[in-house]
Length: 105
Ligand code: HEC
Image (cartoon, rainbow, N blue to C red):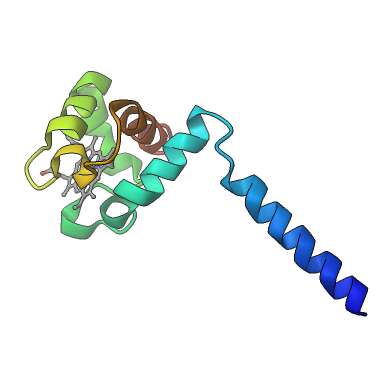
């Protein structure tokens, strides 16, 4: 019984460690989105267009990815510049934006 519990515990730890490893751009995007954008775009807080809400994103996406990137980096109305993430690099913000858009069109 003891051994069984221990191996369960160890496999849980290894699974968590593997999940925390950034494996590619999509994972970085998801990670940055979760840290910097989800607070508003996951909930619709401050009327932010919600993640996965195609209707809310359709008109914005028509303006083009460059316009979306411009808004991400410099802000747009109540959307704060860089999503408020001063520590995020441009590359991280691009990945987060692509993750958000890819799941919302
Ligand atoms: C503090 C809340 C908040 C956070 C955090 C936030 N956003 Fe937003 N975002 C908004 C709101 C509110 C709008 C809608 C602005 C409007 O249309 O008036 C918006 C709109 C946008 C738009 C559309 C802008 C346009 O030109 O139509 C993009 C793209 C976007 N956010 C990307 C992001 C990304 C990427 C992140 C994370 C790096 C992020 N946002 C973090 C609140 C937030």
